[in-house]
Length: 369
Image 1 (tube, rainbow, N blue to C red):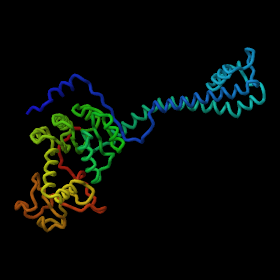
Image 2: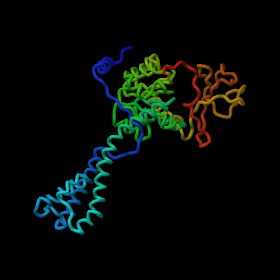
Image 3: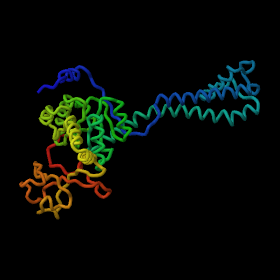
């Protein structure tokens, strides 16, 4: 099946080199250019104050070139003094001028040097510090979650997963918009600016070491290309993708997605259910919102439940996962629960029921590292 716009995307990827950058979560700081401008303004202010002090006490200074010390000479003296050049052609002669140099001019000189040297050192070390931080981040990142697209779907998906216990430090967001990535880093996630259909961008997100990948792009054809690329880089990760059109769901599965959600159809079914029964719609809305009210969770069968029927379990069992099959609670094939089974249950979310389905053990599969 050929999706509309696929050829255009392929040509664009071949003809243009897509730039990308990594953004780690950080505190909101002032723009670097604004910081430099502010420091330069302070340095100029210190220079002006020094020149005015010298000019106010001009009678106490001696100019070897002859004549009195005017305003230009005062600025000249302030410049060579604060920069520690010190030609000595203009020097304090009176006791008052020398005392002023000791108590005021010298501290201003130190402040002037701190401003200029501090700005220079910060500019030189910022790049090194950021590179070291990125290197350390990549070396410690393992079994994380990669979110492709941080729009409404991607944002809601990762918030749902984080509500079950996943730490924000274990989430990497990939999006072509720098503003969107800035919004993601402001929420505490690491971000990559770039086109996720390109393998080098996904490598920046350490996709080959990821545990699960959420694909929530705006276009179905983009989702197919991202799924193909991600599956090529990581054979063992769990990939969940969202599509707009239901007819494209089989193509996503053929591309390597483990689960495909049709966003438009799912929203439509929820709307229809709410029309038929507003109460049922509210219950469904509660179930898909993790962390509050009723939660739909997956957990293993405990030893005390082995040999029981699904209806005999304390929790409300919806389905039983046996091998690669998902069976209903009333399916005759279930019979009695086995130790290797997993249960999908409905539980009420309380502080004591912290269940994180994303960290359950996955079956061993070959991985490309």
